[in-house]
Length: 210
Image 1 (cartoon, rainbow, N blue to C red):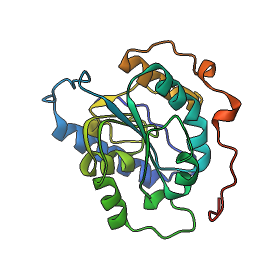
Image 2: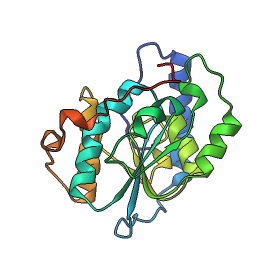
Image 3: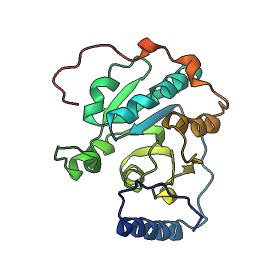
Image 4: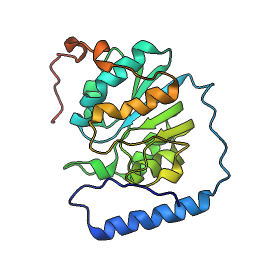
């Protein structure tokens, strides 16, 4: 198994840590060394995944706007139903798809079966998950139709990824897109040059509790 520097939250139990590391050992053992180098040349569509909470999604919007501005990729977002009300109003995103992960739900009971059905509707070229979470990596790997799966291994499940990006520990969430830009051939992008304060919609959102 490759050496991994994990990133876990302070309230994560020692039992959970051991379980994740044990699962990782099994995943890397069965993965072996037989995987082919992924071909990114045919990718025309990128789906960015943020299944967690509203603040995490908002912080990554400048990077998504920059990617939309510098490339010809079709840019999609895969978000929770709560985040959909904001994401659907962004003019620099081509399509927004909903998937409600039960493990990120706050005060709302969500079905795993419904979650899997939502993921099975997604079809894309490259799918990129910003979180680096074993649970996300597992469900995206087995239930989303895609050509390439890229992301981080710091929360487990790196063996499920086609492309594992280097993670900067202690870095800001906005820098999580730098490895994606580098991988796609756009190094050294200053995302602040592409973001304007009115890129975030200033419309009243009703019928949704945040």
